[in-house]
Image 1 (cartoon, rainbow, N blue to C red):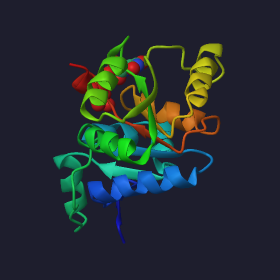
Image 2: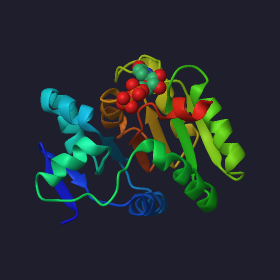
Image 3: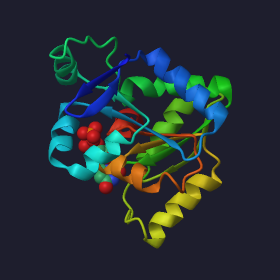
Image 4: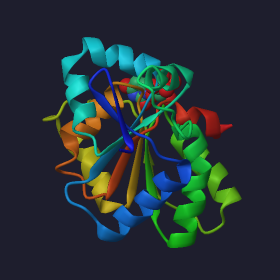
Length: 201
Ligand code: UDP
């Protein structure tokens, strides 16, 4: 079984290549509702033990990937070795390469003003054909029924993005994706933490 259960969270024991292959496949099939993926480290596991709503939204995520030594040790304590360490920061350049080769577009939601835009420009310099469908800061009224929240969803949907990266930190990004995935027309949504900050400079 490629899944490993730790603290009630079912982790996919995949390689980065398998993860990228799956994103490509799903973008070709355009699943509705959007599929949600998460990376979890030990902080996330700790939050999930205390926060029922976060735990539930992890449990209903399509895929969960293990980030870091703590989760690796938790899996080893169950007698299961992880084949790869997976996180948004390592995934991002490979995802950009995949997207540029396969004509998929990425929307970047999160970070303070212009951070996503700077990260997008940097990646477009590296991958010439990369299509960034749009960028939006992660500071807005993200309550489910707010006009501002609906406005952000409209911007994302009108961009026709295939892949949505949400960098608002855990658990906020996972809760936001879970609360809004029925309304989003992207194929895949992934919570990526502080990722845009890393690539903005
Ligand atoms: N952030 C955001 N909206 C918020 C709170 C945070 O966009 O309401 C962004 C913040 O600017 C930063 C990221 O979310 O870029 C959080 O990064 P952090 O490293 O704390 O997240 P982690 O990787 O620990 O989940």
